[in-house]
Amino acid sequence: MSFHQYMQSRQRLQFQAVGEFLYIEASPDMVSITTERGGYQLKQGAQIIDPKLTGMVTVENMGEAGTVTIICGYGRYIPPSDGQKVEVTALPSVTLSPEQEINIGTMPKVALVDGQAVKVSAQPPVQIAANQQVAVSSLPPVTLDANQQVAVASLPKVQLETGQAVKVYANNPLMTKPVIAQQAASRVLTVATGKIDIAANASRCHILLKASPANTAAIVLGTGWELAAGEQLKLETSAALSFTGTDGDTIQMIEVTR
Image 1 (cartoon, rainbow, N blue to C red):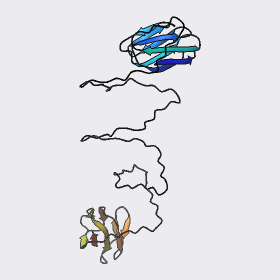
Image 2 (image 1 turned 60 degrees about the vertical axis):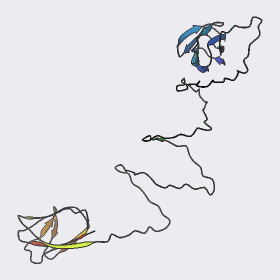
Image 3 (image 1 turned 90 degrees about the horizontal axis):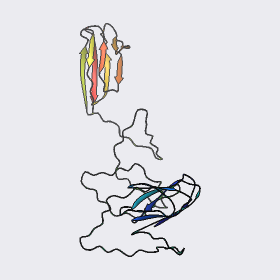
């Protein structure tokens, strides 16, 4: 594992070190090395020996712009004395004995530079335990090929915020089924102590009202709608209704419910 980059003065870069030693093979001047176990300032030819060196390493060029070359590996690095270079092209395979295992429960942090990307080509099957959930915050754009379809078996409940609306577009007319009334009840209500109150009824489709022809004065609905003697009114509401009028006058009512 090696690091070879042209670095500007005070520029910082990161790379993943694997091994026990870190050797500064080339640098314009002092370089600052920060590992997961501490920080160092080294010049060309210096090295760090640490059995737990493996991890993310931050390199900062403390001198003028130039090429910084760092070599990492296992054991202790001894630079060639005759000017030749040592290049590691392959490592032997590692065989685990029975009952041996490798714990990769934690991994060092990896920082990507601008323009780099990580591509995941495959993932192992994932099994969700009881009461576990997977939350998907976003999905990439999906393009369907010719003759492909997406079937949606069910959708979660949707709650609209204040001011939001849902528009439905259809090429064919939408067929709606009218609400069929199941019951109609009639009553005669008499003004007492100057008022008549009709309770709300969630099952009500509509209500038919008629001021008695024998009334001596108009009966007022709410705060201003007057019903003269003999006048009729149909209201499609399930809300409570309140009337005021002269004691003894009456309203004929038919309440139609589902």
